[in-house]
Length: 360
Image (cartoon, rainbow, N blue to C red; front, side, top):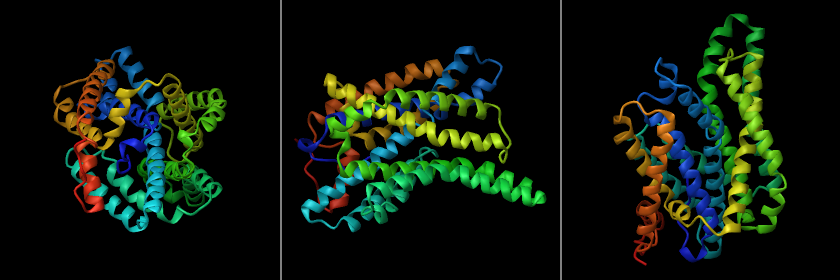
């Protein structure tokens, strides 16, 4: 989700703004699960309107399987920056990183008490697995990321071959594949983005105007592949293909290319906009308090949104905008007086074993 906070003088406001924008995407996406009934349940019901169907389709096309990839990339990027800072300070990165991840895991366990969809525990566990990769070359990290993106589809193909060789086991293999494919995809895709973020962070590519200029040349391709591929994924998913059929394999192969392509397009297009216009201060304030704001979203989602009754997707967009606007205002007011968000300060203080100065 984020790394331990950086001293204000060293921060990149555009990257903070990107974190803030991604957090809005998380809120917009998660509202479909906070709401009771969920958007999917509401759309399947008799009272659903065409606007409801279009709203849910837009969320699945633009956010699902994209926003969390962007966050995972930023997580790996932040770990790389933390590694560079600790190296300059002479601190032992391995022990400090493991301690940070342990603390993040405990924070995630607390969030699980609010909402079963917490990602912090997963990020903390996978974050520990970054340690063996910290000295691998950029090319090696790229190959690892590519393999992980393809792994869920390859595992599904292997299960299909096993089912063909043993027809008696087809039903059990299909049931196991249907149950495992989503968590396996989430974990593999997230760690793939961790690896790419680690490589990018070591070179500070998101702060490199030359790199972003070159990356911008790929935006038409990235948006084209990302949008068309995600439309194809949505069409296959809507058809509910058999778990071990050719359509399910095509679904995984399509998503492995389309989801990272669209996440890449989002990141590059946003950073180019933020640097060119020098706007996004409100988003940057949210991005500097990502952990605090993420947990606040969980609390509001389970404590308020879940109690509102049916929330239609178009209304959910307006609700997300209202909540996020309040978060942006509160974050700006808080950071005008304090150096870190409340949970960022707590995490940093516990990580370094000392009470960090909070007031400006």
